[in-house]
Image 1 (spheres, rainbow, N blue to C red):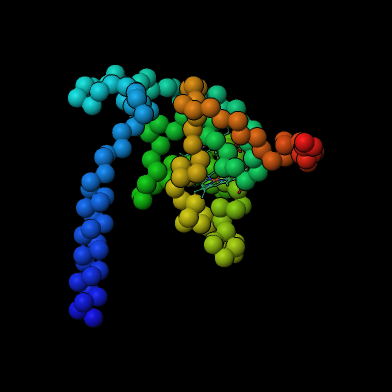
Image 2: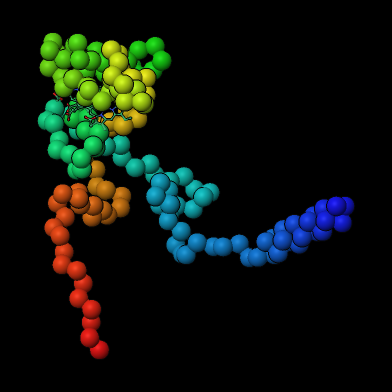
Length: 162
Ligand code: HEC
Ligand code: HEC
């Protein structure tokens, strides 16, 4: 048993040394950080503009089934913490008629066993976990996502003859 442990420790040490001996991997030049750009680490980068939140009050379409709809209005200064949930002041099913807001979906009243309860499920309390406001900003990376229902079925690839 002793011998085995000593061997294991020796092996671990050897492995450690071989890892250390390897030259550090340098990212391909120029190193580009999405927040810092190419500004060197010892210089301060010019902060990017903060885009204004879109606030057109027009409900946006969904990109795929079961997508949490994006928030079409500003949510600045809406309290959303342990003590208060400002969103529910308008979006609770009991407040919707008065506020004109879309009532929270019935799924928000289901517990994780799928049982309907009389109050909002705790796992839906922090709305901004799933629902986010939008900004009219240029996307940082390209995206060619297509919802499954918009994908036209392609004919199967024909085997090439040689
Ligand atoms: C003062 C009332 C009010 C408050 C507070 C409020 N909303 Fe809204 N919300 C609305 C109204 C009204 C609409 C309908 C579209 C519009 O007029 O902007 C809406 C629309 C939405 C929608 C779009 C629903 C859909 O079917 O597309 C989402 C999501 C949403 N709000 C989430 C939130 C979240 C999350 C908060 C809290 C951070 C919040 N709202 C706070 C009034 C409110
Ligand atoms: C765990 C993710 C999650 C959380 C947290 C959550 N939602 Fe949703 N919400 C969704 C999804 C997904 C949908 C769309 C599917 C559905 O109807 O269940 C939705 C739908 C909605 C809708 C549209 C209902 C409709 O009939 O079109 C509103 C409004 C809404 N949520 C408001 C809220 C508010 C307000 C909160 C916080 C109290 C909240 N949601 C918390 C995921 C979430």
